[in-house]
Image (tube, rainbow, N blue to C red):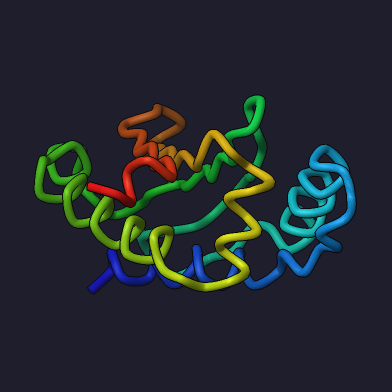
Length: 132
């Protein structure tokens, strides 16, 4: 399913975070963002493309461009829940790279989905969501 592809990107992007744990948080954040930006855009299929990454304080932000999906589907509770479930599954895993990522971006992650240059949906996940 296309929502699994979104989750696969999170795993791939988190694998890039082999930063030295003794370095400063800001420096690690910059390394992560700069290394990701060099690989963009990442086109998954005819529907999803990761076009940008950034941060807001200590929150990591993914920006996706969506095509060939109707606005009503993209804004549906089913799409949001399916995407959120996949993101949480990965973000809350015991993977050491993800644990390091959480230390660097302590305010969690945000997935922004755009359709025709209009933000349609944002999904925010924080470490505290993993205990629920």
